[in-house]
Amino acid sequence: GDQAGLKAAWRVADMALPMVEPGKTARFALLPEGKDPDDLVKAEGPEGFRKVLADARPLADLLWLRETAGGLFDTPERKAELEKGLRELTGRIKDESLRFHYQQEMRERVQAFFGRTREKPRGKGDWSKPDKAQGGQFAKPGAAASRFAVSESLARSALVKRAGGIMPLRETAIVAALVNHPELVEENFDHCEMLELSHPDLRLLHTALIDAMAHGAGNDRRAVLEAIERAGHKERWERAVALIRRARLWPVLEDAALEDARDAFAQALHLHRSAGTLHKELKAAEMALATEPTDENYRHLVEIQTQFRDVQATEALIEGFGISSGRAGRGS
Image (tube, rainbow, N blue to C red):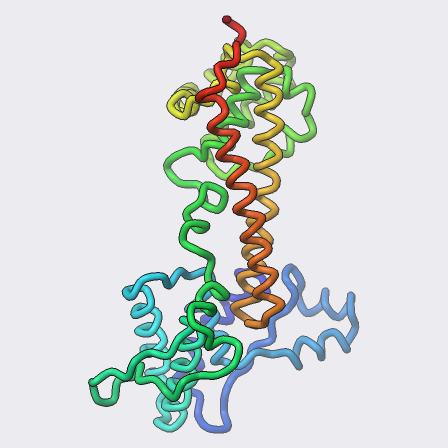
């Protein structure tokens, strides 16, 4: 059930496609995440293992999951790309009759996925030629796409982006607050030591900071900066400070009053931990909906998306606070 297991299942699905024929197919039993067969039997006994086998997913489900999980299909080009991929996959089935039924199955899923029935194309024999209008809960116009894929604005948000070339602003603010105000490390040592950061440069700065505190830097900002420089991370720190200054997040800079830095750090840390939890829940909800598109799974995904929007709104307010507040810093 974890990513490694799914990748293995997808490889087997690719191998099975040319070999399936009427009466001969493949099904896929997905174990609970983090468990191997021995773990499952020890925890739940033979009955638990039999239940996993009974819930095995058909080949068509695995193909659909791989092509749609986590995807965004909000433009004609992306929709066409999905259809092309499914058409190429099903085209690898050698048996003509079975290939026809797989293509029909995928055609119906695409129509439900996009929440509408497409107009009949003029081209003869087009794979995407629609059947009669679909009924049921997933044929409502505009409804299905949101059920299966996260909105583009959410996928692009700072909360779900993976580490890239630019340091994430919220993580940078947390590290900057700790370096510029080492008192915060002593006040929150357990949280600081266990801090999870996505960007490698920030992880290196964080490690240097914790090492400096462990070797007696105390509340001495100068000693912390010297430790960062000795570790070879001076340029990384300078890039982090430049990012903070461009964003005008004054509460985490060295001139800010400790009280302001403490408030900014507490808010940023809360958002960071909330975002991490929501990111994991979002991925699980996406996977559940792609595997089993029920109303219950859809409602759960919508709830997670709503929580994301709430966290984003709070983060935007906090990031804008330093721009116009005019509160006095240390040097005022």
